[in-house]
Length: 187
Image (cartoon, rainbow, N blue to C red; front, side):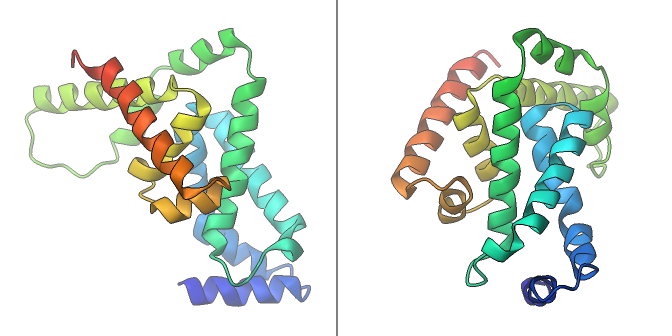
């Protein structure tokens, strides 16, 4: 799949605008989910994901083809989400969490593992609570935790996405996990 993306990027750089449609189609759900997990709001996540693709398209000439496109695209999306988080008013933060069943919709798409209904509800509540606690972490720790444990990127890929040294990635993962562990110690 990486080879197909590389070919499409080369076509876009040569002026073939339609080749970018394939790139968007391949990454749009992944980028949206990443933005949603960072922001906790469907409308903001849609806006930021769309902005990430627009920025990628406009700046495609600056993309180094020796690197992975996904890393570059996730860096754009992550930076945009962090910028949005910084611009939020504190009361907007609370409104995004009150929306109701948004998290439930996402988790309801998971495959049935044969659990009893009460176990399912408890599991969903726990997942929502953990997601909520992750969303309360400072953006630098939240992005690291999301990229590592939810998006499952390697430490090196996270370093490239966030444009920070590998040692800083390791430190932030450790500190983010410790902060999360303190918040979840009673669970």
